[in-house]
Amino acid sequence: MVRASQALDWGDDGDGDERPRPTWKATPPIKRRPTTFVYFVGGDDGPIKIGYSTNVKNRLAKIQNGCPFRVRVLATVRGSQSDEMVYHLRFAADRLHGEWFARSPELLREIERLIPPAHSP
View 1 (cartoon, one colour):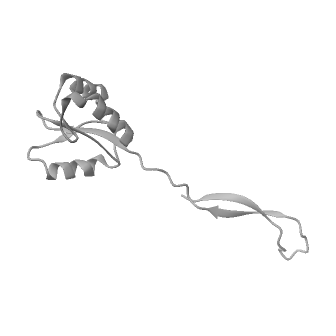
View 2 (tube, one colour):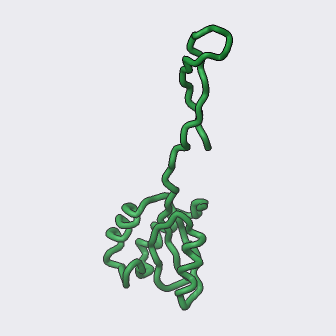
View 3 (cartoon, rainbow, N blue to C red):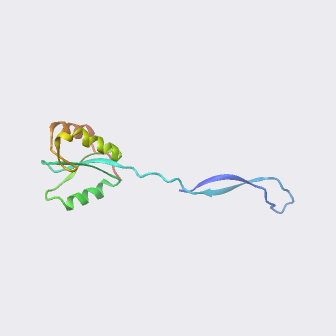
């Protein structure tokens, strides 16, 4: 997306009139940060991974590639790496390893609260 900004041009347009006239010049597009999501991924039972990504679908494929059981997105919520860390701290007592957590009643309640999963890019 290119934005336009108006500027005054004092140049001669050949009509002998030296009045300023507006011209439009393109300005560079505004860089926006990509939308990120905190996701909860797991199987029908067993551990749940809490992570964050700009593309949950691609992230799920990478997780599945290294996971010995079938996983799916259980829930997503818009959020940053800081939000992911808040979840990690909140469920620290249930941490199994890294970003994987035991399927505790409290964690399942949070996932239920977030369902249906937000649409991710």
